[in-house]
Length: 107
Length: 408
View (tube, rainbow over the protein chains, first blue to last red):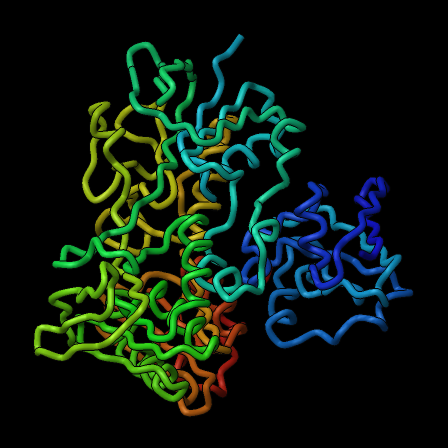
């Protein structure tokens, strides 16, 4: 388990222990975190699990692959330098304490 | 007190109506009725990651069990609507309970088409539709050595790939002369036949099964009508689905190959909508009513109906899209290709990255992309905007497809 904190656009924080190996998206969906829709279930088809990753953790994430890059270009909210799709962030011990912010809109 | 919304069917479409209504602030009663013993879950992984043992049930749940009570969604598991009384706007459930509705949504899905062959009732002949089917199949797959898949469509090929990756002997039997014949062009079919053969599966096209052979009360092989006998200890048929229309027929609603709806997804009774796999709807992409079995269709039709219930009625016009994962190859499809009269390829199939563009009377109607996600996303936008892409432009890799896709 690693503690992941999800912060809504209005500043509400929820910290959830997510099993190592699950994605940050799955941690949100399985615990009913608002603001992450994940309509395609993590298949890189929908871009509705967009998050802004806290800068301190950006360097610890695996690089963005082509299919994620394509979907990040069609997010409903502005793409920023710290934008990622949460289905592509696999939780590991190294990511304990990760903070992600959900965008104003996913669709 | 309003009677609220009753949703018959708790698959992706049924779940999504409830979810979208609450997300929009709808505060009336919502009852979500599912005939399986599970909370709503995703179906696509059943023939992919879940079957392969890479995902567990908790990964499939669309939302956790606590979500329903927290959102005041009355979720009834293992229950189904057995009768609709339209004049009194009331449904009767299998448990004989009665519920009133202001709006009824039929999200009844589809059921597998079964084999009508001698021996089809033998143990070891399986189908894949529900989570319980998949959990059973996953166990059987572990113990099996020789698998015959009847039907070379998406489901059959996905599970053939999973079985092959698990080291099993795999044969795929398809009646038509090519794979996925209803949905993709020959160039894609050929690519996939080669893919599966290169990975060690036997692909038998133009092959008609005539009998399931049994031994000791279990399925032991498939006999083809040319006399070929393929031994098997597990046979899985993926030969399509039939829409669940009986409830609608019983209520006197118009049905065809599905429950007939208008462009707003309303049935012939304006208080009753039908969405997802069971709905035969008009489309900008076809000239006839069409029924689409996909996550996109379920989610977007649900959102369209939720908007209508909240007073924002709009026609359903979303661009259809689909995907299938087989081995490490992703096929993404946008639009509907039926009725195409011209096909052009962009990229070389030999490179494992290419797209196929389908035109009808010079108008782009669909695009299939193999390992080219950027083409797929640009194509969704082009198809949704009505912007004009010519066949020669589609084939020219020097032309950026994004320049034809509206921004945003």
